[in-house]
Amino acid sequence: MIAELQPKFKKVMIIDDNLTDLYISSRIIIKNNFGKKVLEYSSGKEALKYLQENQENVQLLPKVIFIDIYMPGMSGFEFLEEYNKLSPTLKKYCKTFIISSTIDDYDIIRARTNQNVVFFHVKPITKEFLTRIIAD
Image (cartoon, rainbow, N blue to C red; front, side):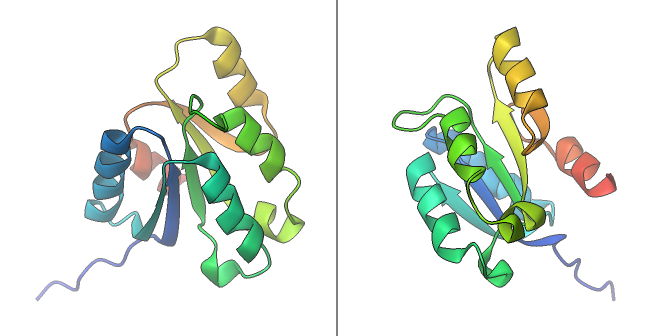
C-alpha cells in the first residue's frame, strides 16, 4: 500500500479578485499536494488584515502567498507596500509570488525587483510552477 502524500506546505494564501482563477488555483494547489489548506481572498485588504492579526503566530501564517497585481480596492503592489510594514517574523516566514496576466514590462520589472517578491509568474498557476517552487 502506498502512503498518502503529505502536502508540502500547511497553509498557502491566494489573493485574486477573479473568483474563477481563485477557485482553479486553489484546486491545483490541493490536488498537487502543494498546500494542505488554501486561504482564499478576493481582496488584498482582507488578506492583509488576516496577516496583520496573525503576524507573530507562524502556525496561522501561510508559507506561500500568491498575489495578483490588478485588483480593485488594493492592487498587488499596494498590498506589497503594506506587507513590507509587517513584522520581520512574518516576512521571514512567508514567501510572496506575483501571479498575473500582465504583459506590461514595467509591472514585470517592478514585481521582479520588489524585495518581498520571490518570483513573478504569468497566470495560471500550474503543476510545473508549483514543482519549481518546491525544488528551489
